[in-house]
Length: 232
Image (cartoon, rainbow, N blue to C red; front, side):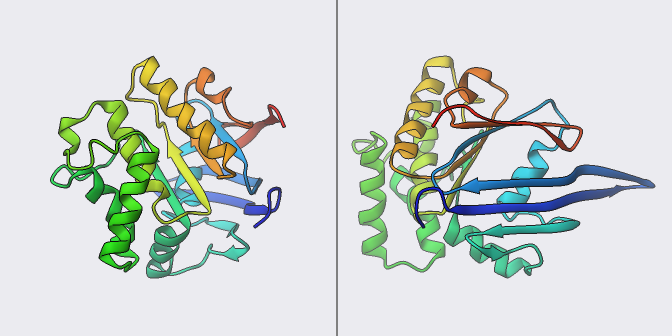
């Protein structure tokens, strides 16, 4: 895809949950286009629909109504196994709590997406070492997550998210568990990825972190309150 092409489209999407006798409208007729190379922050108060939207963007859930197109492909009505394949091949995830496997080394954690995609072992190892070096952990590849600082663990998470060369990187509160210096370091990595043309969509509560992105979308009560492009 070329810079500026539409890479993801949320088309008139609503999401409802049945909670006992109560129906909760988590998202209401949402329309968002994401361009290739976008760097987007999604913000809003608790319960506004951020997590629901991220779950839909990450193919972890499906809309009640409307369509979600990823790379031009409608994934809205796919079966679970198809969605799993899409997640593994087209999406990268960075989590607030890192979600690393404690029994595996740094390089093995980075290899996990490649393992599930059936890549050759030698090629996977070479790719994982290369990514570890890119995030400044080339001298830590045999360490376990519990031997690393929070900032280092999140760098492993970033490297893992890049393993399958995804269309979109989804980051859910990626600096939420970090001190301000480590959080700024992680945002520096995101800046570099954006400069390389990667598409990033990030949920954050931090105005300071959101200001680093290209565009800020604010949700409230399941609808888009504002959609502001910060810079070109």
